[in-house]
Structure formats: C-alpha cells, structure tokens
Length: 301
Image (cartoon, rainbow, N blue to C red; front, side):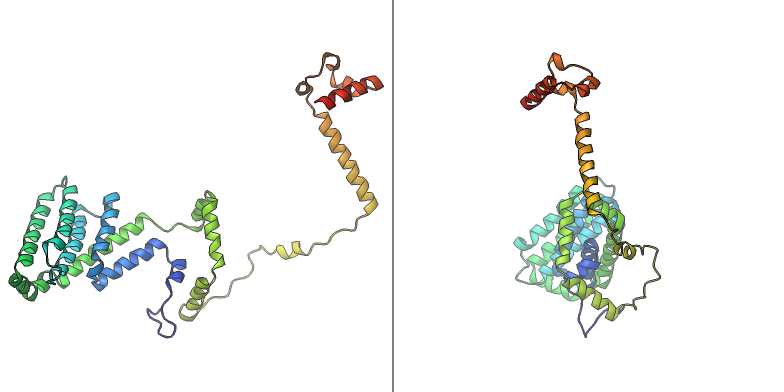
C-alpha cells in the first residue's frame, strides 16, 4: 500500500482510531517524532518514556534506560541553548534538574558512577555555553554536528525503537474473544462502545480508503452451514380450532391454580389446632361448616 494519497489525502484521525489500537497509534507518533528529529517534542517524549520505565524498567537494560532518557532531555537543552532568548540559567536549570533526579533514582545500579560522570561533564558544557556567548557560538559552529549530529540521532532512534517494540510485546492487542470477555464484565463500557455505531462516517471513510488503495476484496466463500435462518423465517402457523383452544387454555389455567394450592405449606399459615390434620384430610373436607371455617381463616391471613 502506498504511503501517500494525493488524490484523496491521508486518513482522518477518527478513522485511524478504528483500525489502529490506541497504544500503537501513540507509539507510531512517538517514533515519527524521533525519525523526523522534532526536538520541540523531545521533552514530552522523555516524560512518556520515563513514566513507562518507572513502572516497567525491564523493557530496557540499565544503560539503555539512562541513555534514552538523558539523551532526549539533553537534546532539548542543547536546542534551547542555541537561542540567546532561551540560553539562560532560569530556562535551562529545570531540565538539568530533571536529568539529575532521574540519575538519583538509578543510584543502586552498578554503572551509576559512569553515568554520574557523564552527566557532570554535560552540565559543565551547558553552563559554559550559557554563560559565555563566544564559547556558545564556537560550539555550535564546530562541535555540535560532530558530537550531537547524525550518529547521536541514530543512537536515539535505535533506543527508541527497542523501547516501543518492547512495549508492544508487553501489551499485545487482545483477540476478539478476550475483548468480548472484558466487555461482558462492564455493561457501561459496552454501552459506550455500541454508541460508536451512531457515528458511521469514520468507518465509511476507512472502508472507502481501503477499497481505493488496499488489495482487492475477495468474494466470500460458500455458506458455512449457518443458513437455517431463512427457513426459520419462513415458518407457517398451523390452523387452530378457536373453541378447542379456549378450552385447553382454561383447563391449563385451572390446573396451575390447583397445583399452586397443593404446594401451600401448612406450617406457614400457623393453622389452629383444629386444622392441623394431614393434607389428605384437608382436601377431604366436605362439610359446609369446615369449609366456612377454612375460608374465614384464609381471609384473615
């Protein structure tokens, strides 16, 4: 599939969200930032990486973690120092403090001495180019592209790529059955998902885009055996004798009432002693007096 579509343009974000899992969409955006060298977003990128690695440091080795985090933040600092407007201690110090705090959290690692020495050298470099305009001009003219140029960017890309792939392995996309099980446990989320059907435009855009630029859609194969619905929909009612049906319904109704009466628990009614007889005796009562007494008792319940 081609990368660009000048005749119809790229897919809108609303359509991308339908086909690309959110984590993969974010990962792709972060990867594009590093590939394009968009240093203005490196601070945000470093915060995301640090947050994830604080929770799951196993995604990278110790040296990979510190190099990625420090490398991204250091690149932000050097970009700020280019300009006289931002090359000030007030602007730069919060970034250096963030680097220092991250190193402090990794202090238990064996390589912390080497990391601290590297950070100290970088801090000295930054303080020098911030306080000395001549040194700053010479640095960016002669040293910057050599030290922090293509090789530096390639190293950041390699670390970022490994980080994103490790993150995808940690959180794979669930299959249909697993997702369905999760939704079954939360009716409110299920309702929100169903409400997406009220917005068909993003899906229609996605399908049309795929038909124009994707592989040809193959015709579905022969029926899978689940073709009984049409026969069910074609069922016919049998002719019914209305008089006979009424009689059956009445008979069934009387049977249900009688059956309910047979299952009444005598103990639940707290019958007086004169009524504490066996069920056979109770149903055998035929005298008018006994019937009236029982009827009066039932009404009082």
